[in-house]
Amino acid sequence: MFNVLIVDDEKFERDGIKFLLSKYNFNVSVTEAQNGKEALDYLLQHEVDVLITDIRMPIMDGISLVKSLRKHNESLKIVISSAYGEFEYAKKAIELGVEHYILKPVDIEEFIDVIRKVFSSCEAGRIEKERREKLLAGYHRSIKYEKEQIMLDLIHGAVVDVPMKTRMRQSDFDYQYNCFQLILIQANFKIFDWVAYRLENDLRIMIQTPYDHVNLNEYQSVILLKSHHTLVHSELLEIGNRMQQFFTNNDMTSAWIVFGRSINKIEDLHDTYADMETMLDYHLFGREEGSVLFADQFFVKEEHPSSIINRDLEDIKCLIRLRNLKEGKRHISLFFDELQDNNHFSSIYVKHMCVEIIKEICANYPIHAHKFQSVIRDVYVIRTPADIKKIIYALLDNEDSDTTSDNIDQNRKVIQEVIDLIAKQYNQDISLDTIASGVHLSPSYLSHLFKKETGESMVKYITSIRLKEASHYLRSTNMKIVDISKEVGFSNLPYFCTLFKNYYGLTPAKYRERVE
Image (cartoon, rainbow, N blue to C red; front, side, top):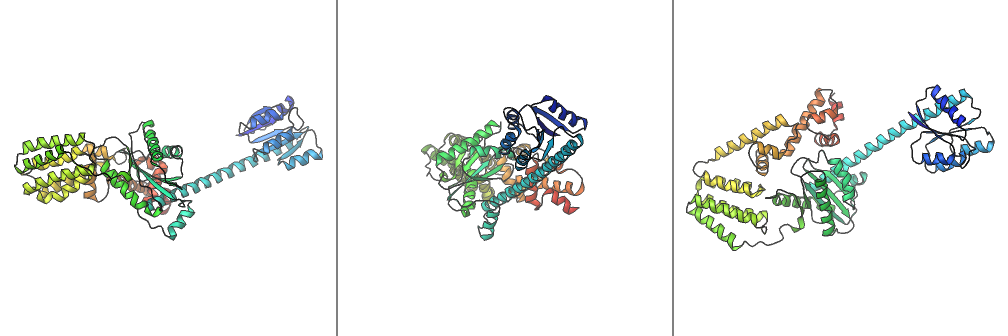
């Protein structure tokens, strides 16, 4: 359907044109105006495809209307219908890009022929506009994808050599800045799949400085701020608080927002990202709610245990040496209560003190000595004091029955149970938290155990299972790609396509074409 505006001070003229459009079954929506001023006001507020106007009218004539319109809309198709055929009028109409000039009284065959040509031109214009919009959208998607790939390569240690700089220039990835700052956003359940575009839109409001952005997976997102001056702490804190507010406003759990140290060279992104991940691993220890963190404040203060903590630690070690396990466990419980109430100690120092207890257990109960290294590794990746306490209690409870082979078998049994669960529920909204709850382990401990047994993180494993299933559907069915995306657990089609291309090197559509 085309929108047509008829402008004439004579009602019977307007009615005549409307009658012809209706009689010859043109698919149009018609609006009328009595003069140029009324028409101009309407045209500035509404979308019109074709304007059919008289020349001589009160208030504003047709030529003045067309002149005014051409300042705002060069693509509007214009037909002049006038009783005046003077050369000057025709000349002005041609200069203003009028499509056709019809003399009154209107010859019906000529009018119908003109209107058909105008509508045909409109249709061609629409098709061309859609083609250009699709090409432009495809270009922007390609540029966005390449920018994301560059960011991923940089944070994972890619060398900034001549080929990399060429990629940056070709994708408009501007690196000619004096200061760079990474932001790592971590959520404790899958959100960056279904809020990806909502977050991207809100980031433009939250961040006033140039930036690039990429979702690492459903749980993590990274933003690279770029500036010609060092962003002060208060500016970064304001950005972090706005991000926290975004999650709160969207009825989602709060997230951990980690700001990396300010760097002057793009080549240093890998190192600062590694620092941020390390900080996040330690700082999540014992915290259920998110917060805004700064990597340059990590490990900067020297910690001095209180006399009470020192005394409790020595009492525990003494009770272990005396093999008074009942009293030892009571003191351990009090020790952890004191640590929980004391905000002075970082997670790494808390873990250091717990390692001292584990050393004492292994020294006095040789049956545990062979497990010392693996237990210590477990302690340093666990995020909650309660989980560390469970490890210590398990050592004390099972000092005469635990063996290496039993422990390994149990770990493998748990991981196989997790793998079976993922195989059944990969297309549902499963997360580390829900799976951990199903096997009665803490999320942090299960995450560590899964990676130790399988060699990859659970998030990557779930994603790979989903993408492998998607490739199976692409090879063996005629299902639409959007339906395949939903079938394997992705509610966001563009996000699914990006992950698929990262994994297979081809978009789902190209992959299907190749296997066919």
